[in-house]
Image 1: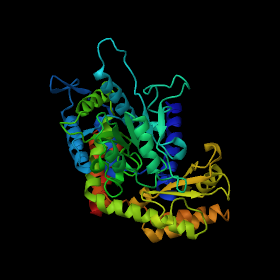
Image 2: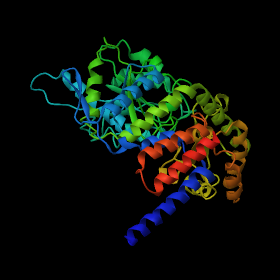
Image 3: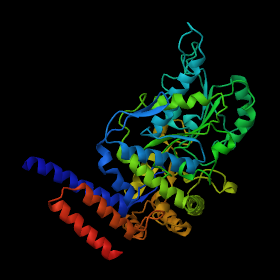
Image 4: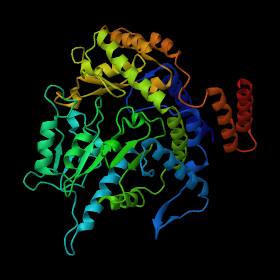
Length: 482
């Protein structure tokens, strides 16, 4: 027992130190991360976190295969309702447990859908041709043949490579699509699927342009937008469904401040030739890709959806203002910023800096980390390899949620310039500055949330023991704060 206790205490001590470092001493600027609110975190450890709720539609009825699932069924229905409201769409599939899985579910569903048209005796086929964003130009890994498209798109027998073509980019700005060349490629190749969305993401995607071009084709492509990085900016940044997209996928923990999950949203009209596709997507969600779909994080996603719908406009507006201010202040501090100044450098939460003159991206990112500023080194479009990247990718979403405004990013930009350009050690300055931004915004006020969290903790712990005593004391202190 002593050995077990030693191991547990050793790692609990490390967990505590990491919590304090990441949550109270660092500025997290990684664009693919966020911190859930206290109540969302509490939901993740509630009873559903250890349960199953497999279900599927059979003969027009939703059938659940476990007992004790009435509560989580209610949660899933309510979460679909809230997220349908958020996107302004008809359907939401919540069972994927990551953005990558959400994409894979769509790709598998589309393969099933195109094979519905097979004549008897014809072989089962993969997707004929897919258009997406080039990985080296910021495209998302999960929509590549090495990612979720693996084995789902046909190969060219002459080259042995998958039939995937990339959305062309402009010579003068590789972060924007070349619309003339895009139109030529679409007409020439007529893909079955067009996937919008990136991981290095500072400008809107040409959804409306493509939709207007293909909408009258007899066999037009399915238009899918992987919004993993910008899901929490839906509306303020771009409204793909209003521009003609059929599907939106994404992870729910980047700009959207939920738990780590994925989703597929659909807006396919009843009279659309793609209507059956939604049924095929549901079938690939379960039983095709998931069994237990992590019910604790599903419960947390519901709470975060309420938060997002309540604070959507205020939060999104501040994120975009902060990103543009941050980019401007970095430029003024002497660090080259990607994107066009006339466009405010960015239309999303992301800010891209070019650091090659100061060192390799990996080295710069490590130097920043040693000073408690967490970023993501990034190969820029003209880099030959990711291993010698010229860029650093940053996002303002998490620190916006911790209360930072435009002028605060001026101070942070100055600290970053000290590290990147002058190689100063500013760790203590960073830690001190972070103390101004410890309270989370765009959620239930802290005093009220702590009381609710204490009640939830009491409901989880055994009725007797030190844990119960601690939870009761926490509840007493929370009520005193209120």
